[in-house]
Length: 213
Image (cartoon, rainbow, N blue to C red; front, side, top):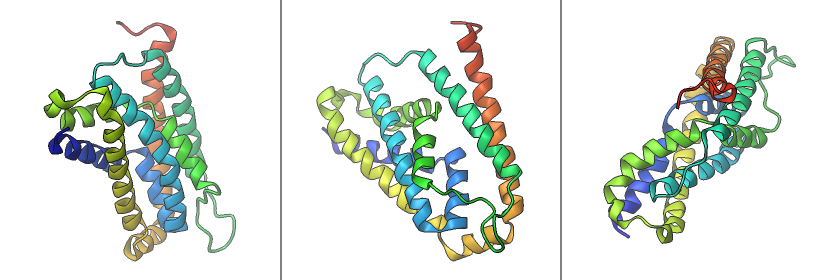
């Protein structure tokens, strides 16, 4: 196993987490509104999904058969409705008490877990990222290397999580968020509903048999 392969797996995991998406927006709201601890719990839950999708991506890269599209269409449908619910809740959010954050996630670990596991784009994004940074060392790829690559990827995921938690918990970020919380939460809610519509748009044709092979 080459050092370039290990470094490529580390960078792929790092970039996979740092690429902005629905989870990033949710982390911003939780971390800036409720503090680094809540943000850390969210990322711990999300890490489960990161490991699942990266494992599938690495298995696909070394030549295994990929999961059928029907599974991802079902995940896309579930994710679409889930994101739509979160978006609608954000758009209509009201503080439960004076001085309290507009949106409070009572179980951030569970929220992160659901986000990570039900994200149908996790697999294609992981596949694209790992392929771009690992495929150059394809000659050293085999199933015996998978455990080590997953460990290196795990280190990359945790490193990216620490970076994000550090950013969203910074005083400047938290002050900015609280000063413009209502606008940020409303805009995030609209974006979540946009992500939901996109997920449903891509999942429904496959489930109804309308997608062309």
